[in-house]
Image 1 (cartoon, rainbow, N blue to C red):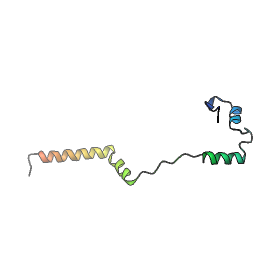
Image 2: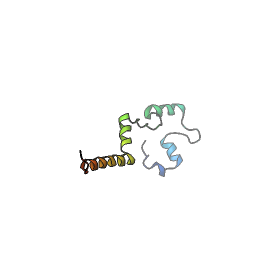
Image 3: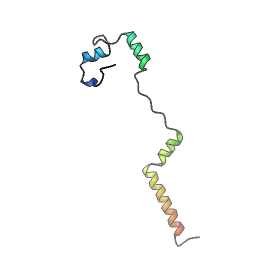
Image 4: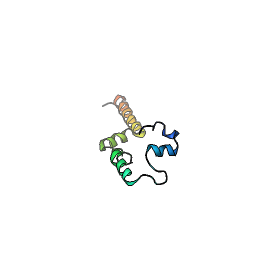
Length: 86
């Protein structure tokens, strides 16, 4: 596909000539089949689903959870060093 640098600067006729197609009829069935075999289907790759461990870690790193963990650590520290020790 030589000549495809900057396709947004080309006219429809120039692009039709580069891709060897007709603007009124589109691609022939055989040309569409050849492109499908060469390039694969025209679809985006799906992101992999997160694992259960990753979901658990993502839940633990939320702001409210981190705030509650900090409060728990502070409470333990205050109780451990307070005047009513053991």
